[in-house]
Amino acid sequence: MRMAPAEPKDIESLRQLYNVIVDEGTSYPHEQMPSDGDFQAYWFGGCGTVMAFARTGTGSLELAGAYYVKANWPGRAKHVANAGFIVAPEWRGKGLARLLGETMLGHARSLGFRSVIFNLVFSENTIAHRLWTQLGFQILGTIPQAVQKNDGTYQDAHIMFRSLCDGSHLTDHF
Image 1 (cartoon, rainbow, N blue to C red):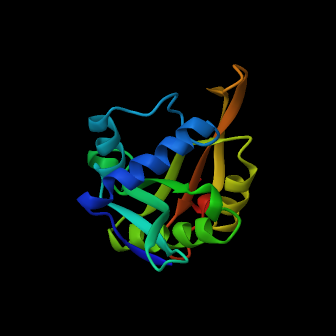
Image 2 (image 1 turned 45 degrees about the horizontal axis):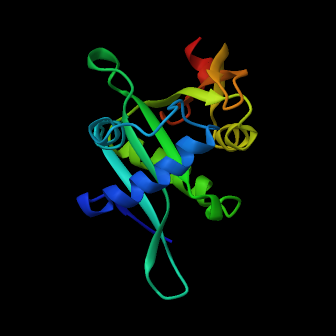
């Protein structure tokens, strides 16, 4: 696996993978692929987008996953990061999401963020919940029926949080 900051030449491969994720409808709120400008603002409007490439049987590199990290809010709350992740279906269950999550935590810390918040973790995305919990995130709250599923029914979403300050835990702040 090769991880590297995204470059302009990576935009199209990221757009194609993100389109697969949007169509699945199980982890992001978009109902359809955002416009080019909105897509670039969403994925490249922060502090960094990191791409994970895997070598194929022919020796070329293919996009296996990616994450972005950015401030969740401006000004006095700009030290709270937000991040988003995607993993290609063929790379799921192989440890890539964990690698991306661990890398993002170090990246966010190196950028000066003090914590990370996920605003909308779909309640039925049990794999994501398990991973984020294992990486030290806690559920702050639940938003009832926050997300409309592809079949027209609704599911809850969770707000998840993790401090990046050494020795600091969520319960230390309340």
